[in-house]
Length: 97
Image (cartoon, rainbow, N blue to C red; front, side, top):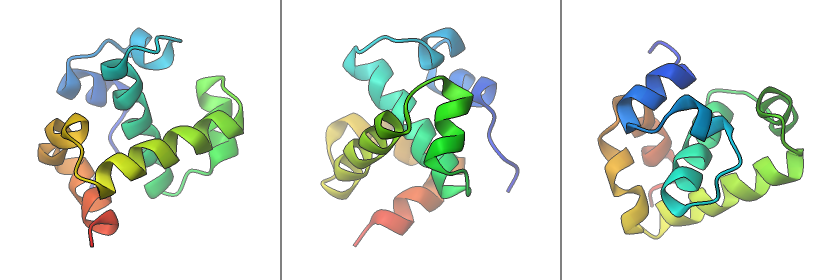
């Protein structure tokens, strides 16, 4: 499967690239951003590399990935829309019990 770019993810989610790379802490944008981080991590990109790409501290990336992983594992409604994104299905399957 071809790697999903930020532009692709933005188009799929309806959230602007600038918002995904920005500092917004609104729940919808933050969860979308963290979903993209977990996708990148699942595809082999390390926390440090994601942090360099996104201009954040590695600890922030790790925390965001842990948060969204917990949301996925508990089937939280915030992650429901992402379950239908073809490129994210493998991520969900790897975290489902």
